[in-house]
Image (cartoon, helix red, strand yellow):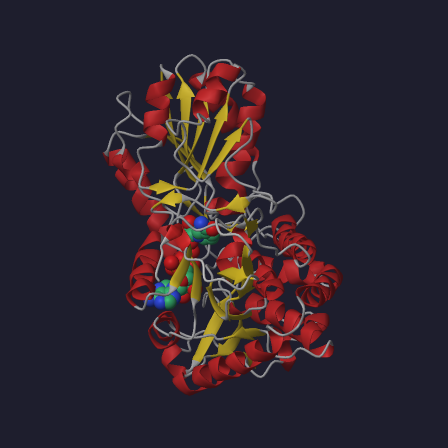
Amino acid sequence: MHKPHPDLDLDKDPRYVADVTGKEGLESGIAVSFNPATGEPIAGVKLDTADSYEQTVAEAQEAFKRWRTVPAPVRGEVVRNIAVEMRRLLEPLGELESIEVGKIRAEGIGEVQETIDIADYAVGLSRMLGGKTVPSERPQHRMMEQWLPLGLVGCITAFNFPNAVWGWNAMIAAVCGDVTVWKPSLLAPLTAIATNNIADRVATEMGHPGIFRLVIGTDDEIGERMIADKRFPLISATGSCNMGRHVGQVVAGRLGRCLLELGGNNAVIVDKDADLDLAAKSTVFGSVGTAGQRCTTSRRLIAHKDVVDELVGSMARAYKTIKIGDPLEDGTLVGPVIGQRTVDAFESAVEQAKAQGGEVLVGGKAHKPDGLGGWFVEPTIIRAPANNELPIAMDETFAPILYVFTFDDLDEALRMQNSVDQGLSSAIFASDVRTTERFLNVDGSGSDCGLAYVNLGTSGAEIGGAFGGEKDTGGGREAGSDSWKAYMRRQTCTINFGSELRLAQGIRFE
Ligand code: NAD
């Protein structure tokens, strides 16, 4: 049985259930979290009910009334101390992620670092949440915008970023004066409890209890309740396109605001003058990192016909040296996928690709590393037939499969890249500035994605930029730049400091 790291205080949380068999169904009121590397249960988590949800949201409303009165820079001090505490607990928290979702240790720790980075960013932001003063058309009038706290933010997260996606939302929301109620994935509830408890403990010790809340439950009982709940002016939801399509409609139906961060089907274009070594290394990381379970994973490689063989040859050699296994062991580069459903989806995609004329160049099978009973697959490269027709590549299979296409002319490559439903991340490797500028064309005819990289792979965003994607990726933007505006209410204020009534547009009403 897993022993939680003592500094994380997981076993002191009233939701934590140490002794589970793994056979408990959700109807027992407990969700069991499994270690995907071993297939064994880690611990259980007591699920919220309609009543406990109601109590949490009612308390969050009361906390919001207090929190919004705290000056933004003082809110920033709370976030600064959360970042200090996250730094102290960086390793145990990162390792818990490795145990619960199978990320290799460096990536688990890297994810917590991302929360620390966004917290640092939010601290600075807490002194910069200003609005504009706008020239009024009327004498002795002043017009200005101010940004006000929004209220409760319902934060729904996917299993694959069980810490940082909350961080992107909750750290920014906190300095904006909002209270975050987090509904994590049932595949990673332990990381959520440990993470939220750190933030809640720090804020409570500083005299601000109840700003970070957690509800853990099934989509039917808790998820649906939250998205339909008018007390949440903003629902920020990360996950699959299917989930987002539904959540977006329900929230729109009550005229709420949605921030959607959904699936991706990201391509890397490699032109004939590219630095092939750089392109190969970046694309290997982009396609096999996190076992292909990032929204920004490179899923399609579109390579010029003159370089495709050399590029794919060197990537295939690299793939064959990748150590698949225990994510906590030194040297492992690919850990498990999250569960059997992903192994099934992987096998089905490989079979469909073969039936559609694809050729498996590397991998293609489920895998069982020695001594581990969990869920693993081989990182896989599949080459599309010469006519580039491979319909399965239009889907996001959340596993490490890279489909290879070939092009002759850049417009054709861009057309292929933009031909999928999603629009999250995109990359080009090329040396000619005319090629890279065509890819980034300011007229909008280049990449249609929210993220566009030149001589960098599709995954591994920095928090300073706005993160998110277009089309079926949902249009949301989180993290840096002006993403904070989604968490605040804009008020346009006009002040008449004269003594005459002056109407806009010169209207006379006498
Ligand atoms: P998922 O859609 O199965 O679940 C995501 C979250 O939505 C979970 O918390 C789930 O419980 C919740 N949910 C599902 N139905 C709901 C409902 N009816 N009401 C309320 N909540 C509901 O996704 P997943 O398998 O956990 O994650 C993988 C997917 O997430 C991939 O498609 C990936 O690309 C995407 N993702 C996107 C980003 C991004 O920033 N764009 C980041 C990470 C993951």
